[in-house]
Amino acid sequence: MNFGLIIQIAILNLFVQNFVIARFLGLCPFIGQSDDKKKALGMGVAVTFVMTLASFVTYLLFAYVLKPNSWFLTTFFGTIAEDGLVDVLKTASYILVIASLVQFVEMFLKRHVPALYRAMGIYLALITTNCAVLGVALLNTTDATMEMNLLTAVLQGFFAGLGFTLVMLLMAGIRERLQYLNVPRCMKGAPIAFLCTGLMALAFLGFAGMAN
Amino acid sequence: MPTCREEFSKGIIKGNPIFVLMLGLCPTLATTTSVKNAFAMGLAASAVLICSNVIVSAFRRFIPKAVRIPCFIVVIASFVTIVDMVMKGFFWEQSKSLSIFIPLIVVNCIILGRAEAFAYKSSVLRSLLDGAGAGLGFTLALMLVGTIREVLGAGTFWGYPIYLDSFSRPVYVPMTGLVLAPGAFIVLGLLMAFFRHLGNRRRRPDLREVTFE
Image (tube, rainbow over all chains, first blue to last red; front, side, top):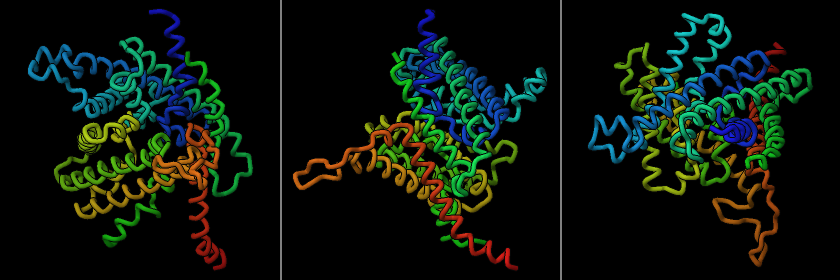
């Protein structure tokens, strides 16, 4: 594993292809939870945690079960091993695996790490149907733009989560200040938040050249 | 009890999924770079919404309350897979340009929301109408955003160039920023503010009555 690749994945997912700003994933929690910094941080940490875990699990599922000629299919279902199950089962299996993973993590934390559970427990339940988590699973496996292995998949999940947290915190900072400004009535809340995000996206376009 | 017509029409303007309820925002921003993409996305999501509403409502007596959400997700995921495969089979180009947003219909809050809030408690016909109405509202909203972004940002509509002079040369320099990410956020923010303003104006007479009495 070379160090350059890690840096490349980090910069790509934090700035150039940021999940919220450039790929439009995970907007519901981004708009819904970014009105104060504490909430934003809690949500960000929980999303990063789940995205990293989900990347790990879904990559294994893809490589060893769904892919054509994978270990599972050749061992148990030789007749369909050639075709694989990617098209048929990817959506359903990913979402079920992610949902049960989140449920499992929630139970585990509640029982064994109560402090961590108090910090991000309430956000975990919301994350199951967050498109950023399913999005990173798809971008790691079927819709990947480069050759992926388990390590790059997990790294992409982790840095994508960090990118989400970064934008979330920036937005929370902006919105805390917006509360003291005289915003037109019809613009209060989500519309002005979208306009600010638009300006932020304009600034993030400046990172586009850093991809190489 | 509301009439069937009301069930259908409530999702289009009064309860528009995007501008009023603010659900399903990710595809709204990502797939509205052109009207064609927006229309395809709207149609795909509506198909899943209608089918899942009908199935959930038909099986509502057999789905135990404790495990209803996983059941809904399985139903929705099956229809998303069907739609994904149909798109790949018959509209390959379109499915390429929508990329991961077709499988991501499965986590679209509109669909799970309608299953949970409406279809699980209502008859099949009403669920069908509700799904069709919300789907139409979603499609129209997507196409509105898509039209603004494509006409102003690329100078085309449905891929055909507009603003031509009599020698069919373009006379307008498109604002490319509107097709890129910042334009998506700004257009949606402004449209949301506009619809909220309309809603406020419609409600104003009621407020006045309350204060005077």
